[in-house]
Image 1 (cartoon, helix red, strand yellow):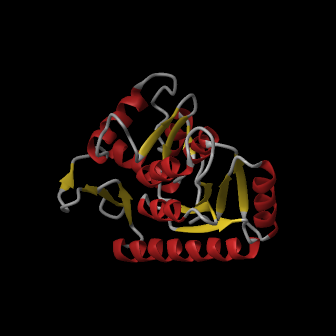
Image 2 (tube, one colour):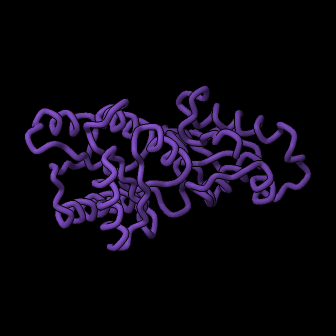
Length: 234
């Protein structure tokens, strides 16, 4: 979880959306509004998000489909907004991975309490994972990068062969989690100015890394390509 939690409010009703955004901002959160699925996807693809408040009933792609997508691709808490009588939506929402739900019309104080509750749970889970792995161990998909021994280990603890430059790249991503880095920034932070940022050598190295850390290198989920910008370790 980031120091100043980032919340996305996704609802197609402008009045509802703006009211929730304003209330959460007054209570110290960084909040971004999304009017539908495409806007939500763009936001979570481009920056870290801690909580998504997601309306179930929206035109186009509905909230249940979006919740399923978020749960499959991101570590983000999800609070569903449902109609007061839509019990089946609440059940299905929880089944697809929502952390909580709140019925419309929304009581803003209750919503704030639920946001704080899911953030506490998320923070506790991340702290437990960190304590288990140790501060010098960074998770990359099913692999773990040991910053002290400069080793990459698979899920069974076996060594995965990496070059010194591949280690430096992974360390750069670990130090800049949630930040999109272009080729020139990657070269600068990896301390290798011998590369030409305009050639494809860094893309080749990242492609090789993906073969080692991604479940499906053709559909990377750990080191993502941000089209036209660079790469993001999520």
